[in-house]
Image (cartoon, rainbow, N blue to C red; front, side, top):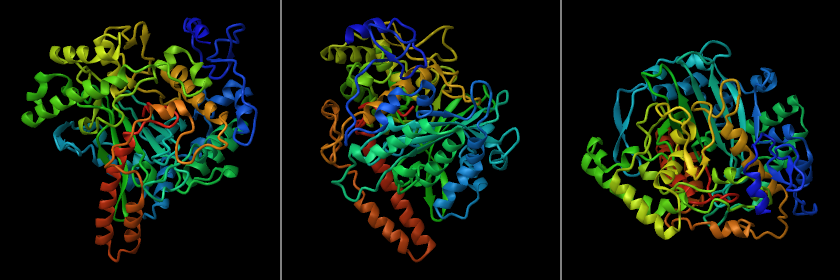
Length: 572
């Protein structure tokens, strides 16, 4: 099989996500080998064979649902059901909040209304720069939630991120919605709501999900194959807003809830900012949707897996708001990069969780076969990821380069220093969304292995206002995610041990979570009980803030765990 894959690397990669491909007979330019499927039994999903045998276009709709098709046709049902205001109102209603969508959006716009300054990094407490965003600050929240108008925001795509599943942390990946403002020259804004999918609440520190707990979620996504456009829109509305998966059951908390967008069960909201460039450079920022008393707000947080670029260059310490403390953090970052992060960056790229993944081309596996730190970089993350200009392109000084070169020799890696740095770059928001870089030479691409390059984007976005997908999504990320979904559906879960992944090769790759960071929910349940019985608004507000702080600790613990379906979980 691997000899066949060597030849397959030379063939063009198409969007044929699940067309069979064999060494003897090629069918189109498909991505997968012709595989023999396990016999359907009690532990194998009834959707296994159907998922394998249905058409490419239908399978694609289980991973990403585009609101506008390539011919410009808009899915009117999806557009109507998931108006921006409707989505926000569904979140507010579930939170028992009397706020209006406009008031909630105001908390995001307010986060841009600041002069150039700095904020304390929540873990290291180092002051880090936060740039002013006057263009976004001038947006009118009423216009953003309006049904029509130049600044109205509409849905453009829905994404199945079952690949991000983490059983110990209690979730089956994420269900995402990408919204976009009507595009205008110099005035673009895309917002992505990344809701966790939680099939049940973990009751104590010793409990975790099994792969069987996530099977109904996978089957719900697979069932979209059989639905008409209207049926699919109805099913997605019930799933995202109510957690209703029809015959596959009901989630206790829907993906579009403050709990799953930054509150009790993690998740986040991110945005690509393009208003009034180039005076305001293109940036990506991140928020958690959290409760403060009886109101919800978008709280600014650091952008995950985006270490401060200055940490790569020792000479930059003097430019930080706190030079002395910054120099200490810089030294710590470089030391941990060499001792801990480097190993994941140069790891074996061909590890597969099942036949479907192993049969993908080597290039596609390389885009997913390494990870950056897996939660070890939380104290180094900054508040913004800038993709215009070269300010956020890592440029290690000669001393750090020499240190990386010495550290990678015992790992047996033949990657160049630049290829290692390119991998680290590709796994940041800037590197993933704009790997070519605005200031780089024409035709430049990030080389992540000899003659293997990071896939292309759509000029900083992976889905645009017309629902067009980037090459990175259509030819790499989506095929990989679909292969993981197929592996799960076609795996016999009968007799699987409770509370741990069933795939032995992945279980061997898992790293133990740091002992002090328990993932259970016992203390949170007590806090929620206190919150429910609090007598006054001030008491409720105080308890809610404690819950918010507790969730930050749990988010850090969750990031330290490899994925249950694939060890290196990429947020992008």
